[in-house]
Length: 435
Length: 184
Ligand SMILES: Cc1cc2nc3c(=O)[nH]c(=O)nc-3n(C[C@H](O)[C@H](O)[C@H](O)COP(=O)(O)O)c2cc1C
Ligand code: SF4
Ligand code: FES
Image (cartoon, protein in one colour):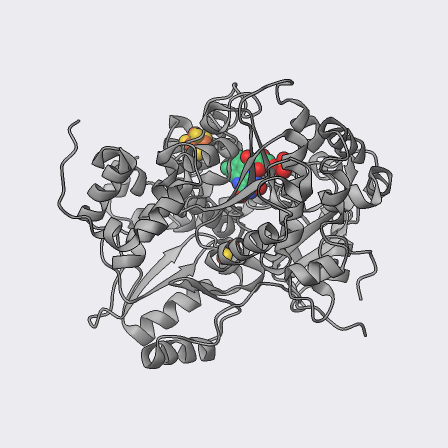
């Protein structure tokens, strides 16, 4: 039994709930939309969201109302809302559940946001692999349209709110908001140089808001129960509301757990996810998806809110919490993530394109026991030359696994290298010649 | 660049209405590119050159613009793949719970390594990066379907079902994990 009140997962946790429009309406669905469209000024909806303290659940944690407020006022042309359903940050699998099990909650959230920012067309950019999710959303959009919640003249208010489901085609980088926009425009998903930010020049060069699925799913609840109610949940004042944490790795019960922000890693891992899967002790934790630096068992009492995790040297990111047990090689783990980043680098800027390749090759060499002590310095230098020097935040993300494993488990790298050095004489002459 | 006039109107003839519907969703035609490429791939299992040319025409693009876009995305195939495209997630979270073993089972059972197709053209094996199902690994996608929390037994059943009937009931439905528990 969950000891915290569920908000986003509440409906789907109710036995028999199918996620159909009928089921959703029975739980009070679309009441929030009815409350606002045509009745509350769009600017007041934005104020309400600002007051709630809601911050983005996609990774960066940007205050949602503030983002909406960046759109140019009195702009007459089209504006757009994009729901970021790309969910491809390794370790993250919550948006899939929100979309497949309670699609109308997401649609109502999109509709409220679209109304607030004045977007007549909204696009849900869903990762291509979620074929079932896209299908469920398509059906839900048709249902909601039929019922008058979406489409032209929503609920007789005069507002037009159209939602389209757009499938990506397999590219992690398309989760980055400007790459998402490029992809939605039918191009290669290369992030744009910012500024300009999407708020002024986004989809088709028009003012655009990009928000994550979970961010948007919170909106109906904030409207229904008030911003004060929302702001009282979690770690006030900066991390309000719940988060759906996606727990993976060596725990007994991996899965999605919705809890108020501010509970400790220990509570999440040991109470909600059932603790470690065997009697091996916990060794490492990635608290916020593959882009977040590793933490150790020393950090179990860190609170899961934006500030506390940042203070501990990592980030809350996408809410993907991966747990690794004693015996897991940290060099191996770093390499797995590095291979991911190497594969997914879009190639637009050289520090990231070349750096991800060098980092991968260097760590691979160390793991294969062919490394040299200088390699550790090389890794550090490479990381320093990538972070902060790229077009998008992918560059900062890709150095996280290397920097953090070097920080806490440098001895594992060194042991592998010492083994390599002990065997060096027996190596092929080619390796010696390259020295 | 002059556009080739291809007599091949296959997609338009067969799916004209669907194509118009897709294009109507966007204020700029090019946005319909990925959806149309999916449509073409659904038709033939991969995107043929003829399809690329036709789509370029429909969207008023050049064939290279279509091609450069395709090559960016891993889900669009430029070559035929087996009838069942097995894609095993190898990213860290799945690797922690045994995805390498999963790849090994396929190698043992089908005799193919990642990147290869069985001689009967039934199965292609690929290893891919995170599919957004990290809490239910090891996992894989076969064509449109996810299969999660895999064991060797499940893999045996999936392969034999697919061979026999082309479908397997072990595929994932609308996702939720952990499942809703009735209050204890
Ligand atoms: C490399 C990279 C990948 C990202 N992937 C995702 C993603 O899959 N889903 C997501 O919602 N946000 C992702 N983001 C964050 C988005 O750029 C953007 O900040 C977010 O969608 C904004 O929504 P929010 O304010 O509601 O969080 C990614 C960012 C980067 C740099
Ligand atoms: S940092 Fe990497 S992913 Fe981002 S734009 Fe540069 S090359 Fe592309
Ligand atoms: S790591 Fe395998 S699905 Fe995410």
